[in-house]
View 1 (cartoon, rainbow over the protein chains, first blue to last red):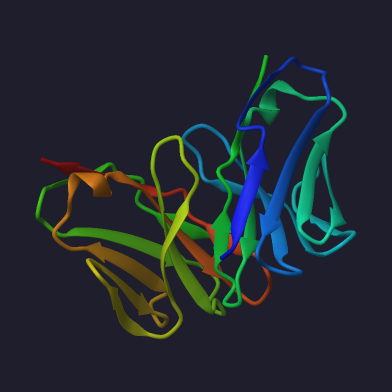
View 2: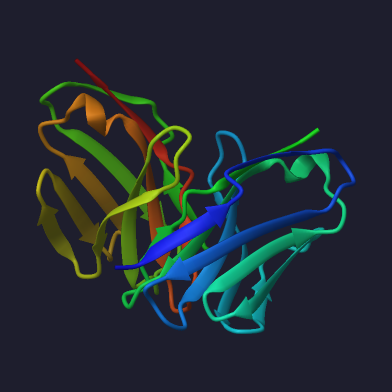
Length: 111
Length: 110
């Protein structure tokens, strides 16, 4: 069965510091992968998606970037965090019918 | 902009009653429709998906789709306190992405 992992689970970072969030998927090959952000009390905002190694599509211009160095690894990064980057970051993969399955998430607080 | 609209709630229902959640979408070409449940502090969990007009039942959950009216709903029968959560509607048009509604918060009163 497929499993999706995210780490860290929680993170507190000062403004201006760098960020690296990691997502890995097990049990499937060449999945479509997604990064979302959910601000407190808000809906899901799609940040990036990837259909293959090295293929990244950005949905929202901002100070975040994504990379997919391996088939089942998706990384979200920032060089300098802003207060507005606080939120719940979710990684997801999609199945054969385009349904998406989410990882446990990383709760980021920028102070 | 592909929009998905949901009543934010909160929707409060007594235990054992039917909870009815509604979702409308703007893109008439939308092809697939999904319902997710999200407990507070947790990630969304897929409940059901539906592609064709009509009803689809899975246990206590029924999804209803009306493409002509651009409307999809979720019924939760025999609501339980464990159903208290935020329910997200998601819609896929013709690409790899899903558009999510902001969610409806449901509270089941014991």
